[in-house]
Image (cartoon, rainbow, N blue to C red; front, side, top):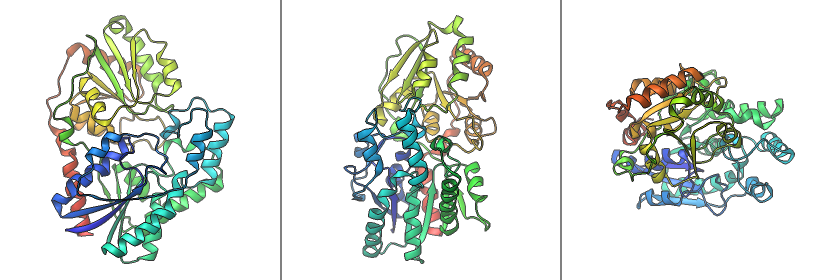
Length: 423
């Protein structure tokens, strides 16, 4: 059994889709000869946007988990912010920024690089050195966001040149869609880019979630980048016995997760208006999670019943997915969005419901949905949204393709284990 140290900021009791990738890896990696050891932040010192205590039940009983303290500016921000919350990705839980929030974003984007969770790094680095030496670790994996975690791997690689360092980048770095809301100066942008390039140039291997993300990262370095695309996935056990959810006798269009201001809600609203004469009293719009105020204001103009469900534990989120007739997936209409591949897509696939994608036609998400024969990419066209919804809801179709099964978490863990043994 090969021991591997995995350094991840987000781990139970942190909630959110990003936690699932490595939580599930821990479940399946031992089957393939890899014993993971986790280094994460102590929840008492963490600045999680979401907490899901139920995920602690999914942590394998025999998994060794080390937790360290941290010292982060976001903990101060939470105390003084108007809503007493840590910002979500894309600032979905913040309305149009007031002066306080604009100043806070400027400070975050220019003085806390790559991100404000860098305060964990010195504690993580010190503990990682101890684990490496005591456990005789030869392979270290760092996973991000937060991308500051990758700087821990970079520092470890400099101290221990013979270790194998695998950097898992689940999202773009300098091209992440909400960077434009941080009011970054040219100096800050260049510094962040230097961090990114240094990680890419020094890691022994890069993992990312889509081919387009791989292209973005490969373009940052001159040398050939050893990179593997390892998409997110789903755990079949999570979908074995979903609990029924009442749909109040209506068809249901559901969105599950964080809905950010950058998402194309105007397209969805216009498409829904086009079919309102037929569906306004037959269709329930259900949003499970955090929805930005801008989206709620637009939705309020629609003649549909709208249900907002606050953030729920992961198992309950799956219940809502399985109860829907159509599941909504959104990708911001921004440059370099083809590689955005949220982990939620794969759980949508496992729910075997029709998926309405608002995103690029040539993107990774659209390709997977087409391959799995489970919905349609409507680009950013309200007319296509209306046409797809009307036809799908009228036909009451079921998904019969099993192509989605190639995205099981177990298969991903097997591929990762093969890489670990090979590298």
